[in-house]
Amino acid sequence: MSDKRIYHPILAKHLREAGLCVDEAPSAEQWRQFLDGIDEKLGADDGGMLILDRNFDNMIRHAVDGFFIHDTRGNIIDANQAACQMLGYTHDELLSMGVADFEMDLEPGAIWDDMTVDEVYTVEGTHRRKDGETYPVETRVGAFMVDGRKVILALCRDITDRKQAEQKLRRLNNELEEARDEAIRANHSKSAFLANMSHELRTPLNAVIGYSEFLIEEMTDRDDQIYASDVERILTAGRHLLSLINDILDLSKIEAGKVELDITDISLSEMLADIESTAEPLARKNNNQLTIEFVGDVAEMRSDVTKIRQILFNLLSNACKFTSQGHVTLRVQPRSDTSLMEFSVTDTGTGMTEEQLDRIFNAFQQAEKSTTRKFGGTGLGLAITKHYCAMLKGSIHAESTIDEGTTFTVQLPVDLEQTLKTAGSDQKEAAAVTYT
Image 1 (cartoon, one colour):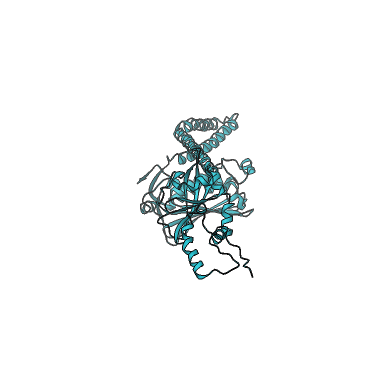
Image 2 (image 1 turned 90 degrees about the vertical axis):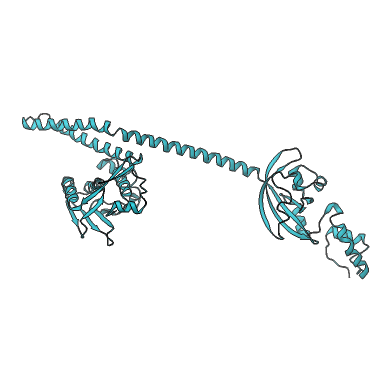
């Protein structure tokens, strides 16, 4: 019975040349002579073709990527058609060449001698075609043994398109970085300009306000009310405009890094009394009841009293603005570890949705457009408040329910000076820190 197995064509050729066939078993002497001579013929005859698994051999020959088989000195043993097309050489020309004849970046033998069998890795290099043109290539390299000798199988892929895409992406990233840097510089220039214009903008407006107040007093003394209502409107508009300018300038100074911290000892009772007297008229305007509660034993802080006062006044002002005939409460208490002081401002006003809460600390943002039309303002108060909380190494958090009210909670270090020293005095938000 004949053997129906399929033999590799090179093996079948050598069997025929040795006078052997699959139908008859060779004698021991014939088989020994065949094995002795086969090593000399492999690699020397048939263009250096290696006997590989037939399916693997077919896969390599029909692959779209270039395949090379070479020894550890870089001498080409075999190459597929894709490799010939990539480099522009015929198959016979490649078999007479070495890897160094077309690989421009890799030193022949530098890695192949040290490779272990079944080790596989990827390198990038540059190949030079027969016409002298070069192109980038990614090579997947593996070592294996054939008839007792180590050979290298290299899969080469032209990565010109990928490199061009990477270069385009790098150029785009560079352009975006330049545009970002330019925008940052422009924003800093704007902020620096507005910060430096603080005096020039506030001085004439304060003059308008002061002169309006003087005229109202004169009219009151003379019992002359003909133009009193008009002057009152000028005074109200001036104060409103000054408030808007102050917010814009404060935010600009923060962005420009020109805000200073003045750390001093603070009496909480005095500070809260001052805040209550300032916020009380705002509460009465919408018929709200203002309550200030202090709980705990800690009576003093060491921080920037001006910044804390403005934080609390901004929160109380908002609470009074968005609450009508309700309650506004400021509660002050030390945390259990006494290293933080907690200030919470609670109102029974309109409240906010989760979506509105997500954007209330953004500059020039209010809960919704109708809020600006109804209540006015620039939407800068909470943005400034958040910046000041960060400068004072604290935090601010808001919770709210529609038609039930809102609570803002601020936590600040009781001793800011010690907090800054512990943190290595890394104060990025302020231009300078003074202690008194």
